[in-house]
Amino acid sequence: MASDQNGFEHVSWLRSHAQRPDPEVVVLGRETASRRLQAADPNLSRTEDAQLRAERIFVYSIERVRDPGRVYEVHLMKNLAGFTTRNWRTKFTNYRFAIPDFAGRQGRAIYNDVDEIYLVDPPSCSTGRWARHGYLAVSPMDTSVMLIDCSRMAQWWNRERAQSLTKAELLAGAAAEPGLWGALEGEWNARDMEYAEGRSKCVHFTALHTQPWQPTPEQYSYHHHPLAHVWNRIERAADAQMYQVFGPERPSLDFVQAAETARGCPPDTHVLLTTSAKQWLSMLPPASVLRCSFGTPTPDPLDPVAAATCDHDYAAAPRLPEHDFDAVVAVELLEHLPIHDVPWTLDAIFARANKGVLASVVCPAGATGSAPRSPDWWRSQMAGAARRKAGPAWRLSCTARDPTAWSRHSKRRRRCPGNTPCMGVVRQQDGRQSANAQLGRRPGLALRNKESLFQFASATFRACSSMRVSQRSIERRATVWKRRGPTS
Image: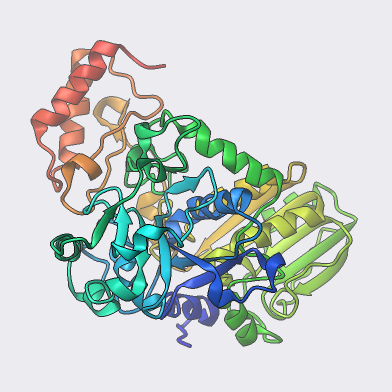
């Protein structure tokens, strides 16, 4: 464990262990425990921390429609050691080509991107076409949904090749082998508007700037997806059931390791509640308070709150007391949890609070925008928990490890010359202008005359000077918006 001058050992432990040698495995169908898990149908999904919301709905979409007689192993492929993701289109592009090695080069597996949902039970791996093909996909070059014969494909796709070759090289090599690819029915990969009600079996939200869960708003200007209601309907069903991929009975492996390290030890962040936070708590006012921490809590009187306080070490016991409290205080807790275990922990906290939830977190340096563990990310997690458990009020306090790290990100909307509201500019990620250099409308954008239009285009071009976006393209977009008239 590494520590800095402020003693943030637990936070750095999680960061240094962010990469794992093998995917985290979620087993669906434990009620059929008489079957050996080695006989389960493996489903490998590529994902990343920013896709936590999509990951939950993907797994739930399988849970709600799966055959109760089948056992499923869902392997969540993200943050895997040995892969260089810098030049990947996403942070999980090449993981799919290591599946034969993840499966021990035997048996068959189903591969899905995380931006998909199942509407029916996933396809069986026992289809007869395996005798003729090594992998099934809608096309040789579109492998966002695949059925893979791991023993046969290990020659072309394995961990070593996935770490050293590009996606194009790996796809081209397999596609050039006669008979290796087999056609998968289109209803198993209905990409966006290919969706047909009652016929499509797996929906794929491929347009990154219209994905309903909006994972990276600092990179894309999101627009409405015509099929957003399909995804939102499944999320509402998951919320109604309080469904989470992990939970107190089955936390992630990272949680188990972190708990073993922190159990019985005081947290190293030593975060104390601010005076304003305590004043907010006293306004509820609570007669009983549950204070949760990851390890032995730091002594911190809740004055002026006059309430009976119960301390709970989450590392020693991830299940909270059975009875409710007027207020639950989470301090020196949430920042120490692995990403996977934050949602179910917040659900448990909100379930025990009758009046209010107070959370205090320390954000790592450089966590800005909607990046995991940034203030906006924590705010979205709190809002999601409040949506699933209506009733308690909540307050979130974020402390930066480096207070100067957020100074240039303090304003969410910039101003153009003349005090004219200016749209946000999307930072280009990988040189693909059509996908990443999207300039979107923002609430409050008003182009009321030629002068403000010129100021808008000029300021936007200066902001885009480091990106591959032409001034003509920006002015053309601004002209289109002028024709539409001012926005309210």
